[in-house]
Amino acid sequence: MPSSTFANAQLPDGIDLRRAELATLIKGFAPGFGVHATAIQDLHLIRSDHPTEDLHQVHKPALCVVIDGRKEVRLANETYITIL
Image 1 (cartoon, rainbow, N blue to C red):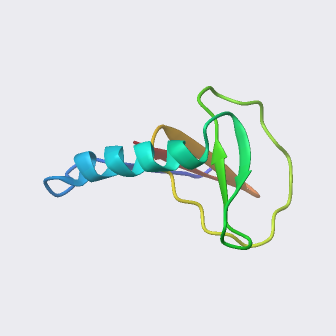
Image 2 (cartoon, rainbow, N blue to C red):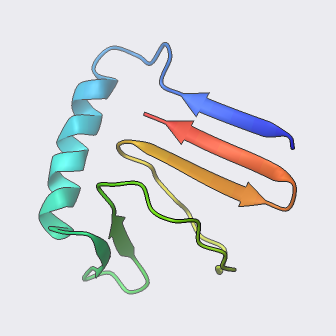
């Protein structure tokens, strides 16, 4: 199965600090595990502090921003992994 991995190797100075600040802000709006609605229609924050079981679902097209941790997405026979 083809695989792509994206990691934070060689990020510009200060990126880790800014990402940590953003993670802290987001945790304020997503205080616990699960999906959290925001004041912006169709913008949801999803928080998981532990690995979850595989979810086999079809979603509408979306933008996923990984702020902290790891995210693995599979599409057909391709796997995309983000590690921060």
